[in-house]
Structures are given as structure tokens and as C-alpha cells.
Length: 112
Image (cartoon, rainbow, N blue to C red):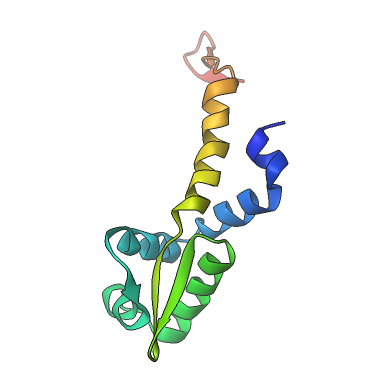
């Protein structure tokens, strides 16, 4: 079994599930550049705060982002530690799984 899954199977599943939505990926792309407050994220993504809050909650529960309260605003940033967990999970496939070329049938189509 792959080490990252042994250590924390739930983290991997929740992390990849959080990454499965285009809006959440767009949020992460924006946070890649800098910490942003909800109002800035709403403006840049052209989303209502209620819709964005739903996606931020999922990202936060997955541990991919963290929030910091300053006055009445919450500022979000990436939690790179959790990205390392997902990265290690994927790297285990590359490192320990033999990648075999697909067999080609005589008609030129790939088969399993």
C-alpha cells in the first residue's frame, strides 16, 4: 500500500475531492499569488459571497487553505503542507508503479 494512504487515507480522498471543482481550483490559483480576503475573491471570481463561502468551507475542511481573521475580514492563504501530502501520494505512483506501454492491436487501436 502507498505510504501517504496508509498515513492518512481520508486526507488524500478529501484533498482530491476538494480539487475536483473548477471554482475551487480557481480559488487556489488566485491564492497562489497572494493572501486574499473574501471580498477580493468574490470580485475576481465574479461570485456571490454565499456561493464562494461554500467552496471556501470545502477547501478549508480539506486543509488546503487557512483563514486568518483581521478585523471583520477573513484572509485566506494556501496551506502548502497539505499539498505536499497529495503530491507525495501521486509521486509514489511514478516511483513505484511500473508503467507499461499500452498494447497495440493489429488494427492500430489500443487495448488493455
